[in-house]
Length: 176
Image: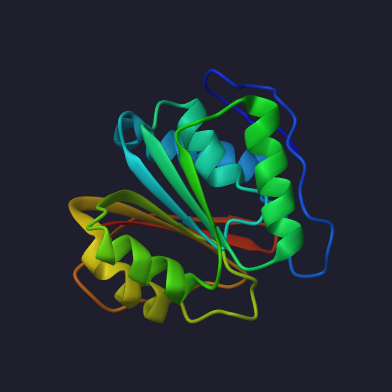
């Protein structure tokens, strides 16, 4: 797995090799970043259920100003930290915790997010709940990117911009 664009293009990433983590394919990330390209530069990113950190690190590579990465798996945190060290990236914060603890800390620090990446393990498919719990963090024109194992339906004041399917992977992109 590698970064597909930006200043760190072609740099290799490590990922946790466990049953709960499935790395997003390069072509899926390329399609996502092509769709949200105008929103990335100078953005603040939250990669919830970060795994290897590929989404957040790809955003940094493409001009995001800061990324928050959240995962509760020790193997994922080790991979994220190794990727950050290998790339020598400083404008990130890693949360080794469950997503609710991280969201509460971000809310307490009045953080505002421009791009939210949601890519939980496919069995944790309550995407509406994750969006609702992150709602207070989202800027007025935030983008939400969801990677899932099936087509999803959501409620709320979001405009669906793109729906992609790559084999067994579905991607939904929403504007707030």
